[in-house]
Every structure is written in C-alpha cells, then in structure tokens.
Image 1 (cartoon, rainbow over the protein chains, first blue to last red):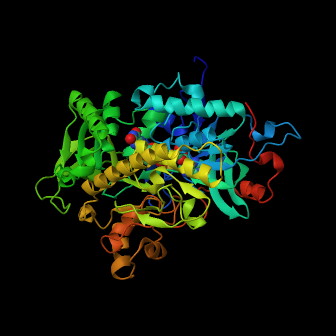
Image 2 (cartoon, protein in one colour):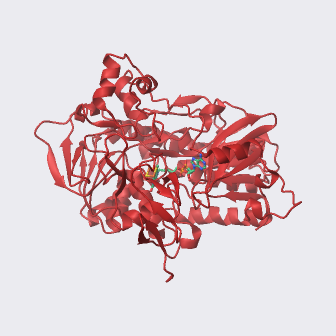
Image 3 (tube, protein in one colour):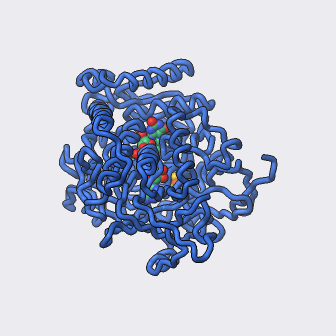
Length: 87
Length: 496
Ligand SMILES: Cc1cc2nc3c(=O)[nH]c(=O)nc-3n(C[C@H](O)[C@H](O)[C@H](O)COP(=O)(O)OP(=O)(O)OC[C@H]3O[C@@H](n4cnc5c(N)ncnc54)[C@H](O)[C@@H]3O)c2cc1C
Ligand code: FES
C-alpha cells in the first residue's frame, strides 16, 4: 500500500495506515489528548477505546460528537478537535 | 453484501428469522449455529470487522496493512466461524451488517423491531430497521473502572482500551506502561504490549495470590485455563515483566499527561499500607477492575437481571440462554463475564434454543446438547470462582481525595458524591445523579456508575445499571428516518 493516505487534523495532514480508526492514527502519531472538557478545561483523548466513554470526541467533516475510536480514518477526511466537539 | 440502497427495485428480500446483535465470540457462534440449523439470520455489529473484543481485528481490507494476527489466541475457531458465515452470505441466508449500531429494540405483535444506524460513511448516519420473530443480544461488556487521583490524565487508558488499539489498529499506546486493577485479563494485555515493544514496568494485581487456593475445585476442573495462564506467565517472564500482587495503582501524576504512577501495597481490606508507596516513571497506565455487562438493549425490553457474583448484575437466563422475555435470548458477557470460550458455548446454546423454539429443522441431538450444557456450566463455575478470587478491594475508596474526579464527563468529584451520600441522602447512583450530575454526561454513567454505586450503596449490593432508552446517541435526522422506514432501508438478505 503506497498510496498517500492522510486526513487533516486541525488543518494539518496526518498520515494513517488504512484500517486504523482516527483514534489509532492520532495515538500512533504521539497525540494522546485532543480536546478539553467544558468545565475544567481538562485534556481528554482516548480512554476506553471501544466507544463507551466518549472521551475521544472529535468533529468529522463538520459534524461534532464523533467518537474517534469508532470512526475509520478515510483519506481526505477533515477532523477538527478542541472545544465544542461535544456540542 | 450490497448496501440496502444498491438493491434493485422490486427485489424483495426475505426477512430474517433471527436478529443477532453483536458479532463477538458469542454472536458469531450463535449466528453460525442458527444458520447451520436452517434459519435466516441478520448479524449486526457496530464494529468494522466481526470478532468482538476478544477477536478484535482491523477491517478485512486492512489485514495486510495492519498485521495483528500474531496478537490473537484461538484463531482457528475464529476462522472457522468466518468461513461458516461467509458460506451463508453466499447462500443469501445471512445479512452481515457491520458498522451498524443498534440503538433500541422493541417488542411488536409478531416479534421484534430492531432499530440501527448505519455508520459506514461517517459522519453520515442512516436508519436501518430489522424485523424478526427472535432476537439474540450478544453485546458483551466493557472495562469496569474505579477512579483514583489523576485517572483522567491523558495516558491513562482502560486495559481493554490499550488492547483494542493494539488488536484493532496495531498501535502500542505507550513506551513505559504500568497496568493495574484485578483479574486475569491484565495478563494478556501485559503480554501483548510487551510483545509489541512496550516496556511494561509493573502489573499491579490487587488480589492476593492465595485467593485462588480458597476454592480450587472449579479452577482445577479447567486445565485449559491453567495452560493459558502459563503461556502468559512465560511471555511475561521472557520480557521480565514483574507482576505484583496485593498492589494497586493509587494515583497518576503529570502535567497534561502521565509521567509518574504511584502504587501501594494493599492490606486485607484493600487499604494502601502506609510506607509502601512507590513512584514509578511511566507515560502510560492501563487499568481494569473486571467488566460490566452491556445490558442497554435488554433492560428496556424488560429482561430480568441476576447477581453475576462480581458486584454487577447480568442478564438472567435459563439453561438454554433464554431471557425472561419470550423470544429474547442472550449469550456471552451480557450474562456475566467469563471469557471467550464461555461466550462461544453460550452463543451455541442460545442458537439451539432459538432453533427449538421456532421449530427449525436442524437441531442437534440430545446428547450433544447435554454435552454443550455441561461445558457451559463448567466454564461458568470457573468464571464465578475467578470473580470471587478477584473482588473489588472493599476499601478502595481510601485512595480517593475529595477533589478526585469520579464522573469524567460532568467532572463531579469524590467529595461531591460523598456529600450527596451524607447530606443528600443518596443511597444509589441514580440519586447521586440527580444531586450532582454524575452520570448525566455523554457516557450516561457507563464509566462512573459502578464506582458511584460502590461509594454510596450498602456493601454487598450489586450494581444495577441505569436504564438508557437509547444505546447510542442518534441524530434527529436518523430518528425521523426511522419513524417511517422506507422499504429500501430494511434488512437486505441478498446474495453477495
Ligand atoms: C475492550 C475489551 C478488550 C478485551 N480484550 C480481550 C482479550 O484480548 N482477551 C480476552 O481474553 N478477553 C478480552 N476481553 C474480554 C472479552 O469481553 C471477552 O472474553 C469476549 O470477547 C466476550 O465475548 P462476547 O461475544 O460476549 O462479547 P464481545 O466480544 O464484547 O462482543 C460484543 C460485540 O457486540 C457489539 N455491540 C455491542 N453493543 C452493540 C450495539 N448496540 N449495536 C451493535 N453492536 C453492538 C460490539 O461491537 C462487539 O463486537 C476484552 C473486553 C473488553 C471490554
Ligand atoms: S475512547 Fe472511549 S469512546 Fe472513544
């Protein structure tokens, strides 16, 4: 598999291996936190890895509240992170 | 399988006899048995590949790019189930719906309506409605968590989360890892991480090693389990991974991510022994205190629960995996946690009951059925013995400080929960929720529920999960869609 595969995270391209979830790709790149909580502005990333805890929320192609650990990464996907992903 | 929308107009698929929700070891075994017995089956899973947690794989198209087969056990069984399922997809009797999340199932006049959302093209969601006279729920379980100071720092994951990143994505989520909690599941996680290059600096098992000797009967009757444990022990020895018993992770520290893990020896009650605390440099922590059955679909249907013996409630079933609601069957960790082999056995038994209850032709004979029942009973006894050997330490709350986060979503502290108990007065997690918002956030108490329960309920009373009317948040668009399901969105059972 030599095709260029990347999605963008907050405008930056992030390469991934086809078959990985957004969370797996983010963790593989060294990112373990990508949003903050509404109350205490505490960092959150992947916790349960199976779609139960909702810590890993991101916005995918403009739709918020997506669990990065469940969404399969796709070339050209636009992912944004930060606050408001859980809105 | 073709997508519902790709079906040709006028083509009328026959509806399934059975909907199986969950394609883990239990659901795969159930579907294969039901298909072999002559039924039409719809097998639905929210994941991208069949296998569930034990046989979690990347999607089929990525087997080469994300090689994880080396991390698996009992793969021949998995491959055999896949082969059976594939064969039945070709005959058109199996609809395998991956990336489909079931959010509710309701009883109708002639069976059940199972509502799912198709998430194969995220963030798009499409409603899918399945109807069948019988429903088999094999939705598994998730890691049980107990909070500790710093457990919401990035770098702290559930033990299962570490495993799912590894098995599903080929990703080792840390370089220096400490594992903690209780139960034999910590060992495969430690072994897999070590095999993939992580330095596992400690496995902290809260139980005492002698706990296994107190009720040796069911343990001795399962030699295969001993062999499995010995294999993990050998891997851990090879990688020089120390396993410390009667020890717990009591805190994690760091700025923005874990850098230090604090562990302590526990006394007989589970209280940290003063002076035994160690500080370990680590960037990752994996924790798990057993599992909580995933009962979201069974509770609203009215299925009764039974004490699973490990501090949680599980679905009550008869010796044929029938729930208390006619037409609803359940198998695997929804009936209490007991490992993949038990899940497979229960899945088969459940399907046999469906075959009998629907008067299908291909039922196994009495002798084979009796043997299957005996195997399941033996594994179940083993699971119960394990649960007793790996209890939650009764005094675990001794390691909480008042400002320790208990509910990760709503950021409710241990102090607030304790106040709700003493001044509230709250004696279960539902009352705490009303008083503090713990359990009101995105995860709906799935993460904090068992811990909040332990903090406020009388000792010994098992955790009863909250009834959630929808098992996954769905968009209003998909909901509106479901109200009036267009015919092309219903279950396609068509050949590949
Ligand atoms: C994260 C995690 C990792 C684990 N890893 C291991 C391991 O490596 N080794 C081991 O021995 N044990 C492991 N276990 C224990 C494991 O749960 C079992 O022993 C075994 O997988 C149980 O099989 P099951 O079929 O009952 O459930 P599961 O394997 O959990 O399968 C349940 C399936 O149902 C699906 N599902 C759940 N709800 C819905 C819904 N509403 N709609 C659609 N689909 C749904 C899930 O996607 C899943 O595929 C793990 C558990 C967890 C929680
Ligand atoms: S990590 Fe828990 S939902 Fe994604």
